[in-house]
Image (tube, rainbow, N blue to C red; front, side):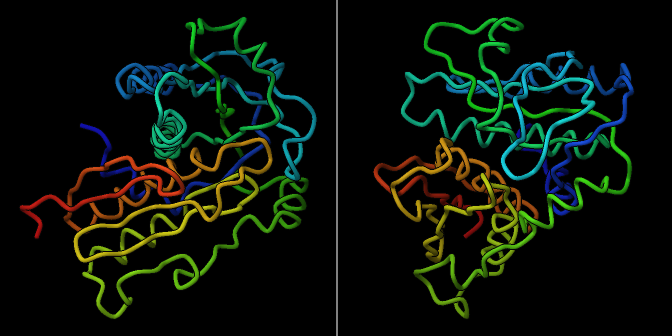
Length: 265
């Protein structure tokens, strides 16, 4: 059931939005998002929709992107820190929910460092050992960016992506199976904190390993969360090429390896 193949179609459409129309989400959209939060979860990670339009959880400017304004609700992404790979799971899960929101016509924006977790903790139940790692505002947006969004996106250069040649090692690109290029093209479009793109990909004939560019986290947001987002994009790209596989978590700077299932070989 998860991940959903139609999330792949949302990857090129997903953009970060910070200005929302002062409108309530429809009951249908609320139901779909709430249902997804209940169904798409892991022991290490879960999400919860909160119908709060006060904006109280956001503090100041969100990085170089400006303030969040007018969102009808937000979704909290929560990890159980007793698990070794909770950061990656939260990124993977959260991006799936964001891609579903995109398909529903709802605007979102990953926010990992400029929100008030104490406010979130007053609005939802946080179990012992759990931590709110990130949130996304959710709401309806105009088709075009607001002037402030255009200015901030221009300053941030958030659309720029490293070339695959800079991000990959291992098997030469001329020897890649067809599914590999599709999977990596999707992973390359994954969002990350201040567009730092902290992932590198080691390509083999039947696998792709995601590893960190360095062990040092920056901007008070774990790079492993970013890599979890890229993991989902990579898997969706492989699925779109007709290839299924399984993730195995690794240690150190190596995050996880996606291994193609035998029937695809």
